Image (tube, rainbow, N blue to C red; front, side):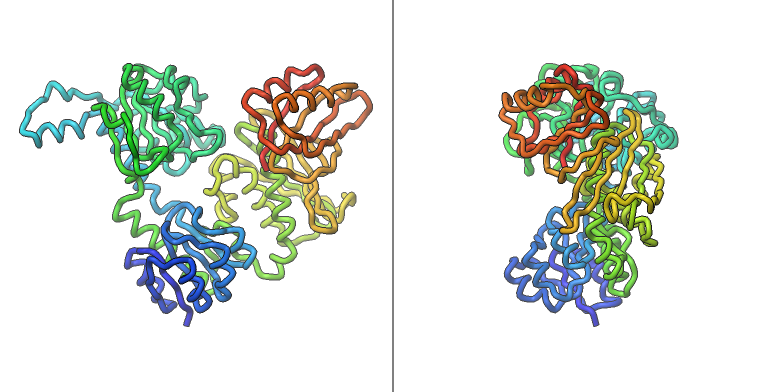
Length: 526
């Protein structure tokens, strides 16, 4: 009989599901060393956020088939190590969707009607009705930043309440927005028009401090902000200033840059509501994630596929052995064209070339390309199981083609992304030693390995332009690891690919585009 280790507190209903197919041992509070000692006898481990499943634990788990995280994130699991060992990693990406959406709506209503302060007043034996005159949400404009599952649910409920909906999500198609009932706008318009603004986005380098002094100044004096997504999206010091000077009407926050919330002037204001990260804290959500992950562990132990794997589920060992190197190539190219294209992507074309065109089971390569394409927007929320679904929900049309006649390499992939900001393409291949090479960008031939930080320019092939870019980077203390130029004709257009040791400082990309002869420039993080 299979054995499952439950290393964190899990709702009993999840444990009961596991007991249908396995011996279940609940052992919480174990150290890494203690888990390493016992993990060789287990087929599965189920956890929440307390247990850290490290590479050492995974290597010791010689019988492990699946690691299940009863929650959304998998930051406490070494997913690459698990993938190398052929272990499926699953989570529950939708288990707390309703809980988080309802909390955001509750925070909005509490803010509009002064419910926390009114409650406190009555309990202090006061009756201050005039002091707590509220605002109706009916016919008010709600600005939804992020139309994923949670944001979409919030929008749907708000629409039913009679609110007007504006939304910003560069990765959602207009067709999908129309289905939800939202008008897609840019952030500036959303900030200036919305009466209530609710945030439903991950924290990324692009979204960190999205709400800052500059964006707060664009809002109505009556605007109210709700954040039940991630801490760090709001510059809390700037928010304090905006509240203190009545630049905006209030805020309701469930998440913070540092948790637990330390010393903060946010506590001083009656028009600021604070809760201790309760978005997923409902009895139903705790049950949902336990049931979701327990069912997936049960299915895998029975030889069935998992539905929310975050690495590569459902592949037989022989197929995995053939495709593993190309999966990384496909994901890398997807990440590259996604960042080159920018904005909302409407279509992704994946062409398998040479020997790859002969693969009958090529779908994993297409899924890997989609995963790379969406990785900048969704981060850890996109995986090999949900990538195709996420693309469909965003109105992205995915086209797979094959061309066995291309023989520059034994097998190569060509990706083309088309969207609101134009069309960009990239081709890549594997060398005989398994190393990835980017072999063309926008049909310009190059041969460079992917690098963490890269800069691509489209420019006129003219004397001195390489030196100007090098000097400009040097003046900002950015070191060039390698550089290559691809061109079709002498003195025509050309592409320059630079691998950098450091990310570009703020403002440098704009300076690069001002260099004579530079038509466009793109930064890429791979």
